[in-house]
Amino acid sequence: MKQAWKKAFAAIALAAPIAMASASGGAHYEKVDLNPQDQVSLQRGAQIFVNNCLSCHSAAAMRYNRLRDIGLTEEEIKNNLMFTTDKIGGVMQAHMAPADAKKWFGVVPPDLTLIARSRGNDYIYAYLKGFYKDPTRPNGWNNTVLPNAAMPHVLWEQQGVLAVKLDAQGKPIFTTDEHGNQIPDLQVERNGRMNAEEYDTYVKDLTNFMSYMSEPAQVQRKQIGYVVLIFLLAVMLPLAYFLKKEYWKDVH
Image (cartoon, rainbow, N blue to C red; front, side):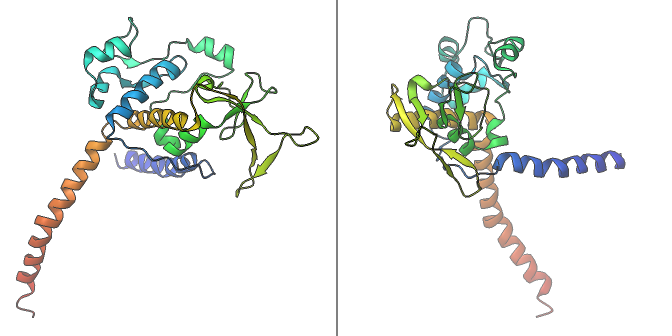
């Protein structure tokens, strides 16, 4: 048993820096301000996720009935967010077969249940805003956050089409960030259905839902933490103070 605990501790110690490295991604992204208590935002994000992400990506640790926690009724979930073959107690499975995804994209799209915890909210927000047209890529798209990503820009109709600016010689213009990464200088080539502000809100709602999905109990966890802190300060701290006085009264 002692040996097993040692192995478990070693595995955690090795995994921690890897998790932190993947979360940071070696770059600083635009800060996104999310509100996990905004149920309207979470409901919009759930709808965006089901309509645009669930075709290729699974969320195999998220059950449809957990959406009741963001204010949706079981009837609303069934009517608006589920296919007829889905069950209310079932998990969110991708509608595309993994073999087909491998054939069309070269890789199987990853499960997105915990992507917000592994990569961070800022990464997701920046990634969803970072697609641009790239004729050299097989799918016609590239991404400023994840260069040469296999994923096409599924939200291009909402955002529009961004393209790399060209100099007088027709060469792409790149800028260098503080980490030495080459970032393409983008411009709008074709407007989408939404303006920039509307698309920002759209992507924030999606990011908010993916953050919730990665830890559905995060709001309750924080609320419990506040209660525990209040208990420690209001009850345990006075008790500890008077106990200390009682123990040390003869010394003083």
